[in-house]
Length: 347
Image 1 (spheres, one colour):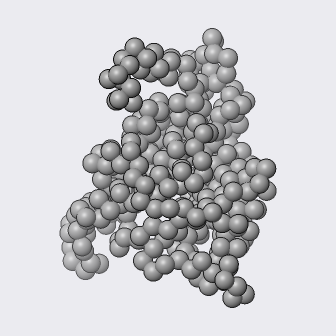
Image 2 (tube, rainbow, N blue to C red):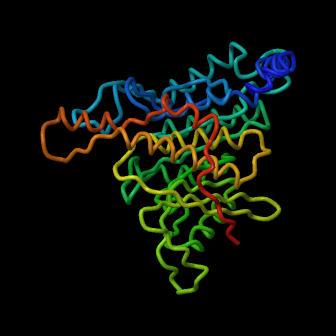
Image 3 (cartoon, rainbow, N blue to C red):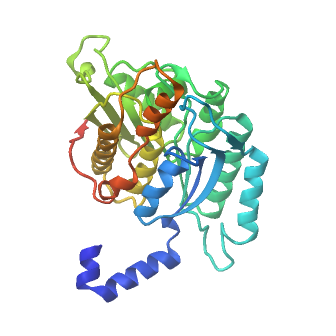
């Protein structure tokens, strides 16, 4: 963009003016949590999308002082489903979902992350249906946050609602391994399990599935093609796109020690941006996503303090704070994703 602006300033101005005035594909409604300090939910998702030239309309499902991993708790408020619908109604009454002169809806993408209650999840379903009615090209990018490492973060009752009501509306989903297993009923031990799980998700109506973190052990039947064992100190990302033929890619990245909160929210946001135009191949989107995520987590890891469960809460809080993602410092990696890893096609 900068090169175009220098060599052809009038062309660049015309192009950006067009984008600013008319392109609903560059507008996102992001319904996620918000923290005053730190980077989870909308704080992790909005900044990268704005860097990538998306307009983002923001609804904060909660407003907390900090994320829930801090030792001394948090303060804040939770938005319920009725208040979400009232906010959307206010947008609608003022022509902010579809203006009087608009041929279709103004919103090109809906992005959702952690949702903690049944009522709020069902309200999100209402909102997504409304936006898709206004704009048939509106994409729903859903991170179906349920839990991780065998532990639920939300009531188990939400699994059925996601499976029966949410996923049939979704164009893209970005679950982790645990969430895929809950949504499909398949325990993932090898690549064939991952493929079978994605087949079920495609069957529910989801065209593009990104399993954001997966670890494979040996194939149950010992066949070489079922193994693809995850290298030690690595984690896998698996993308599956449905179409005339299913297209699937697997990519491994190094794993960093420690827990970095908000990476899933960031991952879904970046994947929305990388796949928005529809002209990015699945392989390219996956490789760019992995490169940016690796660069951000690596930078964060280099700044993170090492701490133990012992000691006072002030020291623990300091350790947690040091692990907040270094998003602002990673602008270049968001704008220019480093191609560090190669995705392999899986048949």
